[in-house]
Image: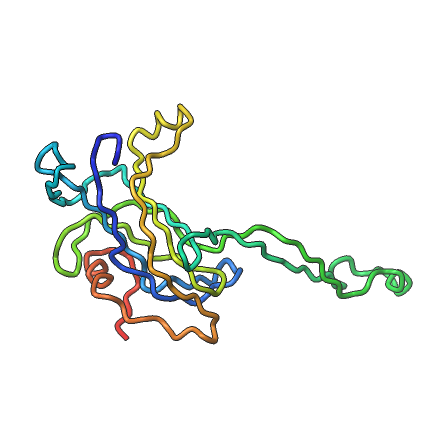
Length: 225
């Protein structure tokens, strides 16, 4: 529920199935397939006595303040897996501090030496926050959707995605007072598998929902085979 008193239903319309791990390079991104899609609808009750058995009437959301954040969890949906310690190796060879004479070379360290360092790295890559977009689904029904077309995972395993719907309504005042954005609802995806390159079975044919969004101009990759 937001500060304006609105109530929302927040669901995963398109579940992730699998992905090929993208490793620790910055350029080799392998998107989760199919792209996760969420939908938000506003629940309007016919009377103020919403807790006395009256059924809500869902309506399309037109709220510019709504955004969704995604984070990576384990297969059970209980433990966060968003960060990992990665080792980076740096080879020190003759081109790094090459000796100026044979005599200097004899007293220098071995020509090939590896220095390892560890750093904390994000496991889930891509755009982790997205805003709502008004589109028609594959049945022609207009709705408010949140799409994550470029998420990728660095390491193999079984995971889930946790999506948090929050409102930026009044955020400037909240920031001034030191409070956070208003969290409205959460949703967790079904488990999906991230494979190594050798085990990955290949990308799936695009769903009808993905194709419907692409036809309306949303930038998402479509596969027909």
